[in-house]
Image (tube, rainbow, N blue to C red):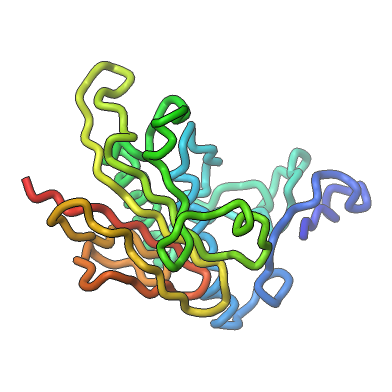
Length: 232
């Protein structure tokens, strides 16, 4: 929820936020709540970095800057709106995660399309259910369907950037699990001998690892990105 009381307008200013406090309102020392909040922050960062279009990023987001719930701090020239440039260890760790997300966006052209896919091209981006089937109209209407995947064919990436320079594209699979439980996800049938590499996991950030088998397990409230191996 927003907390604009310090603005002196009785909390009437600013839009109501669609937010989740994970069980505790405001700062907390509850390790479970803190862990879930940090994972949610990584999830949102990854979604912004890997979404089509221009990433909407506010200065300070990269190290977890907070205004303590004040979403309209126009009149606050104090600790509410100031930047604290002394990064704590956890802030440095998050900053590295942010860098990793945007580096992934930069190196794979499927995440940086400058136009929408139309007609036959739309087949190059497919939404999948956990069993590997395509998302149907009925599935999209189910509010409980909180686990899904987006398969981006390497051909969906534009061969040149805005400056006319060649750029690389790899088939990528973005998996999202918004459920409070672990879910299995069936991987698409391979079109060739190349396997999958896990290049991003918000539940346990780590180095790139090769996926063995035809399915993956997604931790609760997590986002995972897989890329096709480059065998060239």
